[in-house]
Image (cartoon, rainbow, N blue to C red; front, side):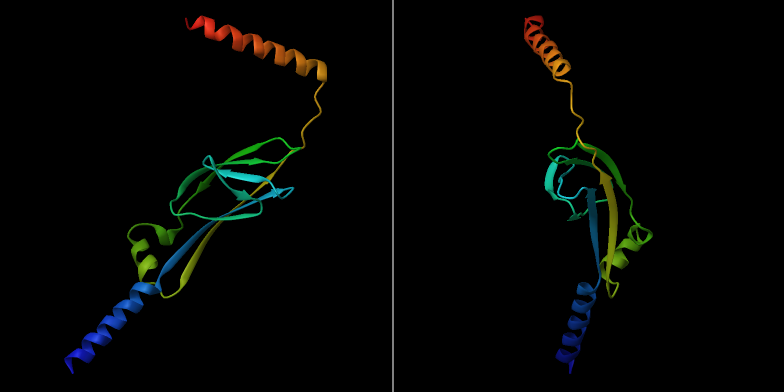
Amino acid sequence: MIPVRRGKLAGAIAILLLAGCVERELHVDSDPPGADVYIDGRLAGKTPLIEPFTFYGTHGLVLRRDGFSPATQVVPVRAPWYQIIPLDLFFEHLWPTTLRDIHETKIVLEPLQEQDAHNLIERAKYWRSEAERKPEAGK
């Protein structure tokens, strides 16, 4: 009779340990879609993007797409009430269902403005002269 009780106890513990889970996702969308998404400097994919994450805090987003100005945004990802210590232990390991913590952001990309070719060339000449002058200043 004792081995049966141990088996039931082990089974109950296994069920409890496998029960709880919190899935954290950052959903990034853009207008227009199809932009490259960099999260904290790492290429994560294209919009619309669903990116799982582990840690809360702020994340830096950069979106790039041909024909549009790059867009940057700092996204604060705050922990919900059930992820605050010590409640997180219960909801991560003992809660009988999976909880989904979804943070959504949408970024509108602005089309590139056509630049006056003369001004662009003058700026390029200025920056070239600056770049050529700086190495001499360091000698």
